[in-house]
Length: 601
Image 1 (tube, one colour):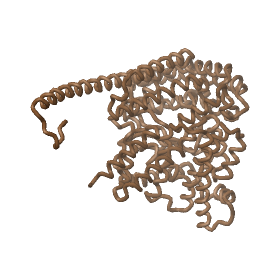
Image 2 (cartoon, rainbow, N blue to C red):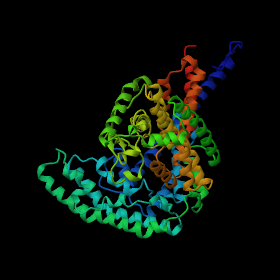
Image 3 (cartoon, one colour):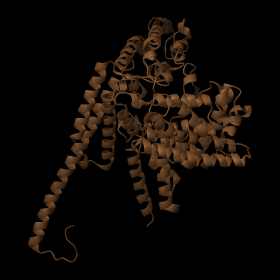
């Protein structure tokens, strides 16, 4: 390998060369050993951090299919957060001690993603995000009532574990209250406006009879694997625990919210008004977009997209020969009964039809599909008034529970039918369910990557999936296509109003007015959405940012490859790497382009 054809090799030089070959071979073996050692150390670190994460968050462990901690809840004292912070710093130090450059390309990606996750966890603690554990749409008080829906409830032991968690709920609530009190003392509190009408999310669980509680449902319908002789005792223990622990805990939290927390919340809406708030917002911008981009740049991108999408919306209005402007058209859509279901059943049947229709189109668009199915449920009554139009709940990591597409049937006159296609493609197929369920089934990824996510990828994909409906025979009705554009406009407006409120001094009314002016969303939905952005800064930036990047990469691949471009292969490239930051996604697509270009040469 050292000899080129134009040289003659003499015997002595040949000996030297042979010695060199031996030395290089030994060096290569040494290098290979070094790579293997570093890779082994990396995966040992992954395993140690994963084990720590499961032990520290038992509900997460159950969710991913590890049932060793099914009888426990997370401890959330100040000391717990400080201890986790120190552990994450230790994991970070150990990671930095490894020679990244000696790893394979795949393991460098794993290294980089692991490093980013650790940086975000450390920053979250240092910026004291943990002192604001709830908002109007998320938090332990909203998530815990989902417990019966995602824990195993097949055997007596499962029921005993479920009861143990119900019994631990009182301590869990008291710890959350103390955490929020500390937030009040240090000035880390949510804006007051987002808690208007918060009461229902709590009073729904303050019941006079245990049988009326959502937590009682497992005791009303036992699995066949639970012997009849054990059921009475379990039911009695369940009733007692709900009455003596769960209901009083919700009563304490309700009293705390009413008497202490809400009065202490801030009048301002921008996260920049928190201590170190500007740094906090820049951190969440980076966290949710995986990019080093300024709020001002995102704001300008949003304005450009709003202008483009509005022009497309107005083209459809012209096609329909509507006389009037966007606001008048929006009023027509909001008030004409033809666009609304007359019952929750009608709405759900329409959703089911859309999902089934898309199910039949998936093989044309995708080479690889998840095995686990996706079901439909209604959003629970206790959160329906304050939550979004729909949301998705991922499947269990062990395959024991399907993914669930939750549809909000509250106020049917604010759930237009012309939006259902875009909504369903986003939340279920080929959006969240296809991407998340497929990621969980990727056995080549380390565990932490199968069950972690980058919002910009997850939500960017789901918004891209809405647009895929154009290629799958959806949006043939101009009103439905307008609904798609309405949803895209909504996400473009998010770039404007999120940065506006948290970085540029916008008021809540200003944000609502911007959405009213540029979208046809109902005012009820707009107000709920704006409050979501206020209480969850930065998250709303992920959708358009991710979708624009995926579309840009697809256009680049199509232009470069021409007839060699294969959409099903492109989707494999995007999805089979799991949820990743945008720079790594770009690397994957560029590698695919180079490989596809050389094919057939």
